[in-house]
Length: 250
Image (cartoon, rainbow, N blue to C red; front, side, top):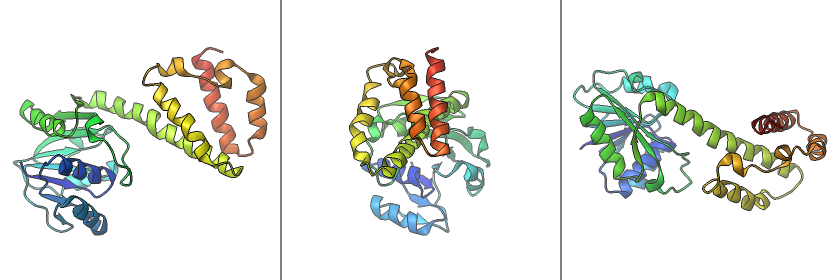
């Protein structure tokens, strides 16, 4: 099967690397950012182009959501399968006279961070069973965790991922702002962060909750609020503590 990946960002990079590591041939990486494409090409030994898209059986669009439809119009071949990698878009966003699908890897991707691709859940949706099996077989060569998922389920998977990953990482960034402001090395907190994440592999997150809000320790809560000088930090602190209190009906 001839495969072309469209895109040059984090998802495109990791898909190309995952396919390369698992001896899955990719005919081409195609996109607009020549420098980024060249880096992927050299890293994964895959040809790239910014001008002419190769003929393929499967095109995987790994670009930002807001340009997915635009990029999909560049594929003019009709007898082919086209899949996007978005968790928040239906397969029908793809604009072309070809078979449409979704090929969604549930992970946070950064080019500088190596991943164990076998652990990444892949969610697959296609217009017919034959294409469904093609995509599931492809994903299964990379991951041990491949599932069918329609758009109705996938958009809630993506929403959950935003809470579980993007919001949590933002709190890490805000926490680092506080520690940096007091010349406290953020590395002090890494064992705490690691244990917090590791704990929910064994304990339900609601049962694992600790801290002054779940204890309804008003003295500590007020002490922290008095220490915070940033309006944004204070708003976050109060909002999250209020949410914790409501969850535990304190």
